Image (cartoon, rainbow, N blue to C red; front, side, top):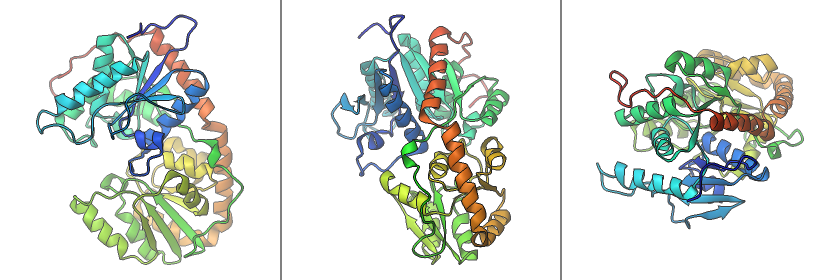
Length: 399
């Protein structure tokens, strides 16, 4: 293993610990878990490669070669998703093989995004091995001390452990900066999410083959996304067609009931999975992107839609940007969303104007280059300063 301290005139090496990113890196269509966190990390990684950094990823083991090189990125595999014996597999193979892959990556900086068990495990390994950690918030719930989206006690404790000991914390919005300070007493650096300019194009012909006005919804079909609102909304707006993209957990009662309800609405087309290359067609065809979530971070689907000139009708508005820049409309509850959708086909010019404003906004504020510029500054800070505060791992009352 090489010395982790890079020469003064050399760029540090960067490893993204993103277990679900292999499908996006490799282009394998059989690996269908591609979330916003993975998209962001791959965009950043490719820009770092372009800037002559040594970049690697630690991902799950899908049978691929270890140390495979993809577009200048070295990819190391940790463990298969379902490997190991129940009750002991957390330690082996998950912890042991995660740390082994991190050792093989041999990076100066380790970047991990989103509240998870890996947050604590990545930080612990880096502490033992003198490396630096950049942690990126992926959702507003990552700033809530109750951690409503983390189910297990161990998962919550390890996340808190890693969060408090990361060298630099990145937030997606000023709101997240405030929430993190209020919830955990921790400061963070604002580094906005980015979107690739290749999505942008001339103004496309809007509307689906089924209807003159097309509504697109993209995301995980789950209670916190309030995806159960979709068939209800669609049923009351028969002159709009809804394309719904997202995977549904059919092992849960919520998932089974939702899918049954979704298939009963005639003006809905459900797409369990759409390849990223084909998502561009759906974005460009939609008159608006619909968001029904309780809370978000800075949704990647917003950036992708705006880059394609598609405005957003949303129940959340990160940093009030939708209202400030005219990127769509905000409607906080079901009734308000319903009314906006009922009125939408008669306001085509308004939505087109919002789409044009959205393209200008995302081009000016969310380029990959600008995001990596800000991240480079955060990395320099991580190399320069180490956090001195080291609270206890299992502090009473924090489970």
